Image (tube, rainbow, N blue to C red; front, side, top):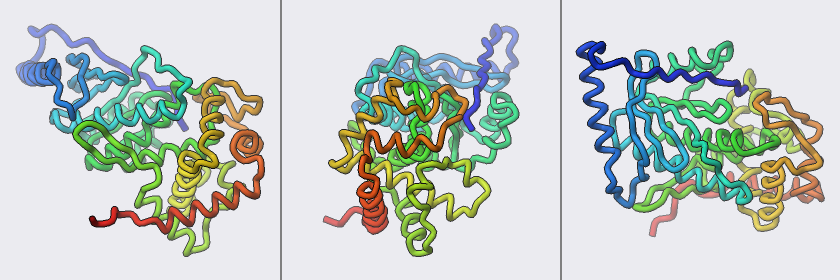
Length: 337
């Protein structure tokens, strides 16, 4: 469950009251500020608009502003920070393409990017209250709470994948007035898990995801696919205490549903209309308010989908079943030239 977080950013004390160790930390951070604040931006890097010193309790780091994000980070490797910023800015562009009617406001989204698990855990305990235990159980880098994302640099590839996934939840929390079906939102987040870098852009591939494809194949072979009627009504938390393979199947099936709606020409335009209606709060079938409470009406989800993307439920179900099998059978590696 996403809960309200509390952020504490202490103003650093005067230099004459800092210990020698703290002074040295400040000096090092100022060097990083200078490096990241230069006007010259290589074409494969995100432009840093502003960089400054940042402190939370006794943890010191940098506050880095890009076009759409404020990144609070203790990571000192500039290349890692640049890759993190590139993925998030690239993902933001793609998130926004799903709801072109929405114009991003001037309030930038907050990202906390810690260098260590210990820093991340301390921040999580201090800011998520009674839900801290649930967030501390996260294994792959981070989580989104309302419109804030908090992570640590574990395996960089896993961290970036998690960031792009959770960034979709963060975007929806900020810009949508009414809730999307939880399974659809989870599936959309999964469509951002596979990406490639070039010199100029980050490219996301919504229909390629080796982890989710393997989970689909396992569920098909093991005969434990979740029926579509059930899938669209539940959310990930409903499976928290179930078999891990079933949880993997849930995410994989949610991914297949979202990928079909995003990419299949039959559904794409109606899908975008549905996204627009949810973002603007302009729908006669409201699943739930997007107010952070996580409350929603499962019984309204099928009518909601039928209004926008699935007027013929049997045809929709047949198309979804085929999409699941097609994605499960799709090669997970690119063919050799």
